[in-house]
Image (cartoon, rainbow, N blue to C red; front, side):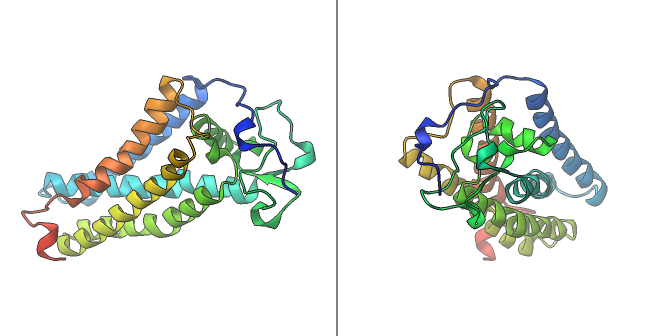
Length: 244
């Protein structure tokens, strides 16, 4: 049976959200993935490739790699990291209340809590760090898990498909799938934050620079700005609407 404690009374993570070793490592991971996407664009695309096509390639490969590395690590912690409710303590800032509705248990397991909060691996610590900004990513919030399953198993392969088409200079086909990826990413972002806004953002921490401007604004702005505008830019003088 789920613990009756209100979600609004969840204890805070013990360590404050500051730039420490974990946060620096997390930012370094993102920077490394971006550098990898750029390096791949230099090695896989022709030198005569237009700047717009190259930037679109970099973005979609970056998007896919983020989902296939960090996104996969999140799902791994959700499905394979758990702790018996009786053993959950606050000594490491862990939560004793599941991120599920009352009387609902993740995977039907009413005796355990699932998520990065209850792990000690490096990937668990990375998501514990991000959970300082949005607590839902530390537990088994059903909406977040559902969206991550879609981004990992649907959106990431589609983004790789776009990269393949751009490499082969099949711009018309690439643009169609770019629209599909863009709509999917925007919908995912919308469904991530709308429930929070409608409920008064009980799980978001906007009290400091790191959680607000880096984790929530900067990271999420990337998946809003690029899909909504950059991915619909014309390639080689063609506009999306001319061949949709």
